[in-house]
Amino acid sequence: MMPDRPIWRSGVTLAIVAAFCTSLVALTWQLTADRIEENRKEWLERSLQPALAGLFFDSPVTESMITIPPPHELPGSDAAVIYRVYAGETPVAALFVVSARDGYAGPIRLLIGIALDGEVTGIRVLEHKETPGLGDKIDTSKSDWVLQFDGHSLRNPEPAKWAIKGDGGQFDQLTGASVTPRAVIRAIKQTLTYFDANQVAVFAEPPKLDEAQESD
Amino acid sequence: MSIGLLERFKIGLWRDNPGLVQLLGLCPLLAVTATFVNGLGLGIATLAVLMASNALVSATRRWIQPEIRVPIYVLIIASLVTCIELVFKAWFPDLDRSLGIFIPLIVTNCAIVARAEIFASRNPVGTSIVDGLVMGSGFALLLMVIGAFRELLGQGTLFSRIDMLFGGEPVRGLVLAENGWLLLVLPPGAFFSLALAIAAKNLIDMRRKESSAATPRRARTLNR
Image 1 (cartoon, one colour):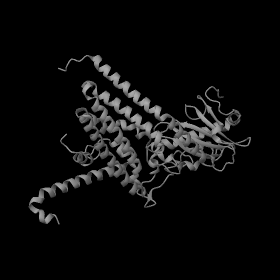
Image 2 (cartoon, one colour):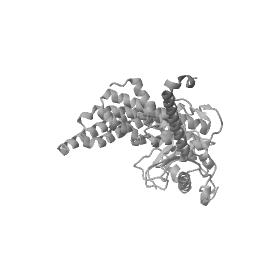
Image 3 (cartoon, chains in turn yellow, brown):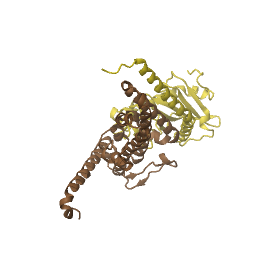
Image 4 (tube, chains in turn purple, blue):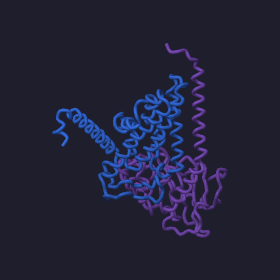
């Protein structure tokens, strides 16, 4: 026979431990939140640069940010971020930060730079949880895979060819990972299509309008 | 306790190594050891969680009813891992990005809950922390050895991206060859490397046993 201990005692113990653990996490979060946000911004600044390759622009890109809340036609169900790139008053390109939702292990956060003529200026993977050694080759620190899209647009190749070679498309696949490249390519294609259709609207919106702003 | 510190380290690093002998925590062990730095990073994170969880479990062992001890271990370990993840995101953002999901997955490392159950729940705080240190070091050391082995043969470098730990510009580390044996970087390479490590340990243990058994009679002929 087990010693007869009232069940509420176990409940109380669990509650105390849970409260303690929650405060521990909350405290750590308090101490790290600012730094984490700082790191994220710094990382963003750093990682926006490659998507601007070959463009002439003269204003700080991060200041022309707009946020498009869901639902929108861009990839991902979270808010999409767009940085507009200007040379003087003239729009030059737009950088999209979107999520490919159908990655192998959670969403893949992508930075997609598109010039005004619809050509990809550069693509980088900002955040992902893909399998190390396989899907993580979408990351430029592991392989050059993501560079192959530079200079392509919806006219080059035609939309049907925006797929990996194994699926009858034009782009290289990744050994051992098919879900990951498919997700990335689909997201790029969707973003290109969006920019094609909404170019005027993207540049019409004043910068820094956040959550409250309704998107078309 | 009767066992000295040195003896404990021998147990954790060699005799009862969590990875080599107890075969615990194989998921992260196999997944992140493609490079030395990744192995070291996850090793440090695991070591920190293990020491802290051993300390907490041991400190609370007298008033935790045995029926609910497992959910409590889970709570403690999960919160500690969340804290470590936040710390990594704040101070080692590159490493955190490189290890990805495997930092939060430390929660599932059986080595940690095993030490809580087997050791920390029955021993005083000090000894439990030492046990966490020793077992965590054993695990971290194995991660580093396998990481170094796979990186060296798999991509021909050593200590690449060490900047993720110490800051500075991205570095390729010691480049010994331009290309490596891809198999070792891929997941099967992790299994082969671990198998080789276990085999090597068993071989050394066997040799030792043989020689210690043989020394009394054939000391002259065997020892040079």
